[in-house]
Length: 275
Image (cartoon, rainbow, N blue to C red; front, side):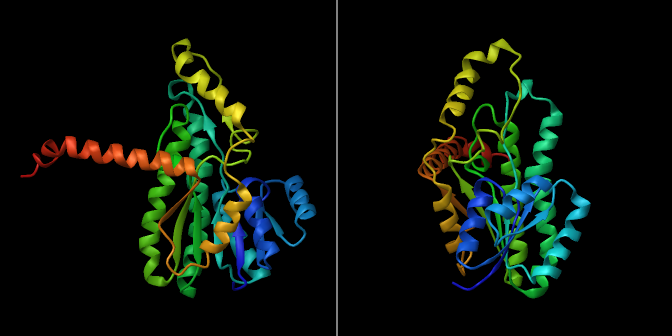
């Protein structure tokens, strides 16, 4: 495995921390972004080999400067892990639009802003790897996480376009689509809209309770995900998206089967609009 320089957003917890830990243990150089001085201090104490950088991905105008300084101080980055993000949970009717804006600012606009800061550098060097962390929620939907799924669907689509645009320059772009893993996603990192409409109680309250009860006990192992990432970035032909977790495989496969069935059922109507 060749020694690489990683730039990992949201490196102080969850997948970001797991990948930073694994990469630094393998001798890679790791630059990890955090949002606060306290997080920077904790990351520096926990992973002394990692270089922590203050960067809130919603401070869009500052990101090119952060990336420029990182490459000035640590040399050219080989791998961008666009990991920073969080989950929002709430019935759509009950959830304020402001919470949707915040969800998209972090999960979509922040990820795209960081990627755009690297695109010219990777293009000019004719090499680089961008791994955008989406979710199985970027390929399926579930009641109560409309804003989250919407943000991940958006990043999934943008990543596919980015992949096709950067391929001629030797730059790889892929998405990581995890299922349920033992991270803080469903715990302290999740923003939850308060319940207010009784009509949704029967549908959504059991979902919320089950998610909270399962937090920390999910099947997915973040350390195993990190090991997969280290192998993936060495690939000369990475997949456009990589599902991780048996739950992701099951749920996405079921959605594809339903979609194919719907296409076939409505095929005559679909082609009837041709002139």
